[in-house]
Image (cartoon, rainbow over all chains, first blue to last red; front, side):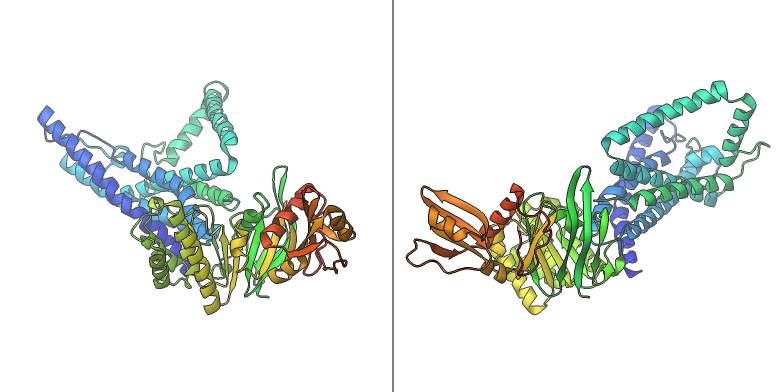
Length: 239
Length: 303
């Protein structure tokens, strides 16, 4: 347990320092854009940008990818098992995603309050009433992206270049086939039911109400599945 | 029970068999020379011992505990790699700090002391260090770790002669102060010949021999003289190689020495470890040496 704690500390402390740098650069850019908009349009209601959470998504995506390569090498050099490495990476993802979701929730809510024209991702989809729902939704969203990227990089690393390219092409083809199936093969009623189920999974129920728990559960399940897949690959990963 | 036991380990990469049913042990409290040519399988075996890659068959045990995916062996073994696996953007002093958190047996003060002796700037990031100082950084960590088994994979890569001398002297000092198992995998055989107590020689994925350095050097010798006299002397002996110059011949022999016939032109001289290594592995490559003799046990060098 002590060893695992040290690995988690390593993962968290060496990753969190870049979070502040990321926000510093992001908000400096936002401040600059806002000033330019203020001077150009002569309004104090526009920030000049929306949905800043997408920038965080890129950041956590990179974090997921790096976790699979750089940190794996460092920790395996220091004698840690793959199980320990996975637990440390998962803890780091949870920690970073939790912190960034908190910052993004607070900033999104405040920006919307000060500049009503500004929309955060969660606010645009589910409204601004529930701050905790905003945080947990963002947290799950970031965790899902982290887990997917972690799984993808591990799988690419394991499969090698040629197989990965083939898989990518296969995945692209599968998307086209699924879209075509929905348009021309699957009966309209079935397609509508599937779409309805997907919407419900994201919280939009058929009776017109919005459920904020469903999307959280959906993303948690998907993140857990990706995580389980990543662990299955990591267990077989060699240096 | 105190040993690294390699049991029937096989590792294949496609059609290439990197390790072929390898079985032997590194016993406790000795300095080993783990020798072999490029591609012999040294690094593959080291990586299996360090749980970095997995064997296709067989297993490695450290003090009776399986080495594969087992945190119970974490404080027992450390492997200094030839490959750079460290966080390249991290400062040396931070690496020391983190290694101290990862290993209970890591002496941070000693690491700083060794770094100072080598002139390693601990304020520099790993990637900013020269190749030689990157090796010094890695061996500093290995020397400051008080675990029972330490493996050095090409420890003096890129080091100048002064630093190599310093390393060997520090290694011996460490061993004197705290006896443990040190395994040195290297190509610079003559440099480690005076340090290592036992040699494990690997070639083509098989262990050619495991023997104490002293006994090995006693067993190997050279006979030189006129070719016909040398040929006559070598009859029935285990000749591992020959060199010829005009009518003169030099034969490298493993096994018991016999008396030189009186009045003969022959001369017997000792064979150094490097020459022995070159001849043994050269013979193995020729394909007439190792078949059926994966391991030549102590005192029984049937090649």
